Structure formats: structure tokens, C-alpha cells
Image (tube, rainbow, N blue to C red; front, side):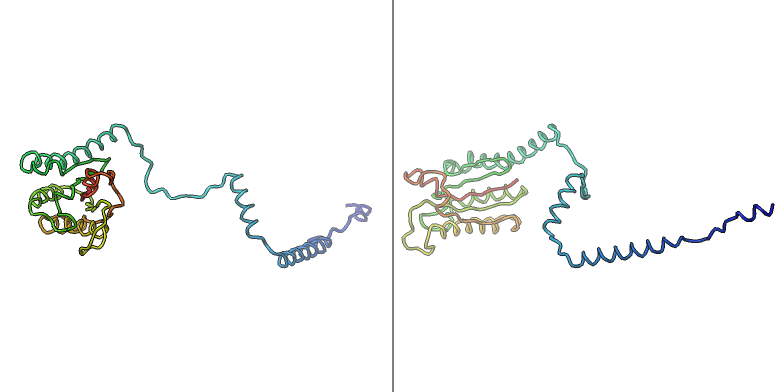
Length: 237
């Protein structure tokens, strides 16, 4: 190397330039300043929720939801098959009772009605067949038919509701005080007889009393009041 070249060599300092230290200090001071401003400010939580909700909808953010079962479609064949099974179970309830009414209990044929609504079978018994006026003691003549009904119900599954109903003629005296009390007592009498005479699981049975408040016919006529004085045995298939 020549001596003239050595004179033009510039010494280069190593490490961070000096101005970077000043710049870093400035950034730290600005950060502390904005943190101090944030600490003095108050956040409106309601506005924050509204804004976050709007952003979630805008960007399509979705929460993960646990899926326990895979979605299953219901085919028409399976639906018709289920309906056929329910219909068969309903026939198992209706047919034996109708047979008993046709053969052994013809005198009660006009006093017992059977109705089917979807998966419910309602055995409707008119009051004159089961109880005397204003009383809740079961008639001996009707007990054998009620026993047969209980044996049929014992072979089924589902809840059984015993519901008592009356007409709107007020009670005069007696131990029940009102039509509501009388309807509850009659439902309880039927339920107790079924529990004592059959092996129906007591957990399946429940009683309800509606009094005069759920008529199925007009109380302005004798025939209408006769229909309203009833006990219903409702079986849910």
C-alpha cells in the first residue's frame, strides 16, 4: 500500500449510532405518555360491546359450538314406520276395551267413550256409570269393567292421568264443598282402585281435578251436563 492511500482511510466507528439512543428515549417517553392518558380515561363498556359485536358480524367471527350428535334426517319411510308402531299400540289399548263393552259390559257401552289424538288415548267414563250424584264412591256395578281397563293399561307404557270433571250445577252441602273438590275426589277414587286392583306402577299414575271448568258440551241442556260429568283416563303412548 502506498503512503498516499493511507492518508485517505477514514476510521469507522462500530456499534449503534448515537442518534439511536436519543430516538429510543423519545419512543419510551411517548409510550409512557399514552399509557398515562389511558389510565386517566374511562372506558364505556356498552359501547365497547357494541363495537366488538359489529366487528364480529362484519368479519364473520363464529364461536365454536360443541356437537354431540351428527345431524340426522328423518326419512318418510321411518316416519311412516313410527306411525305404524304407535297405531298398533293404540289398537292394543282400544280393541280389548271395545271387546269387553260388546261382550260382557253392554250396559256400559253408552257410558264409555274412547278418543285418540296423536299419541294420547282418552277413555272417557260418564259420571252416572261410576258415581252417584254428589258422591265419590265407586259403584260396585262398574268396578269389574274398570278392573278390565286397568289390566289393559298395565300392559302398556307411558304416563296415565286420571282427570275428574263435573257440570256447573253448584253442590249443596256434602263433604266436598265444591265441584272442584268433588272432581278431585272422584279422580283419586279411580286411581286408588287401579293401584289396589292391578299391578300398574304407581309412578305412572297422576290425578287431576278440573271441576266445571273444562266442559266438552253445553251445560244448558241435560245431555250436555251428563257429558260434562265424567272421569277421563288419559294414556300417553
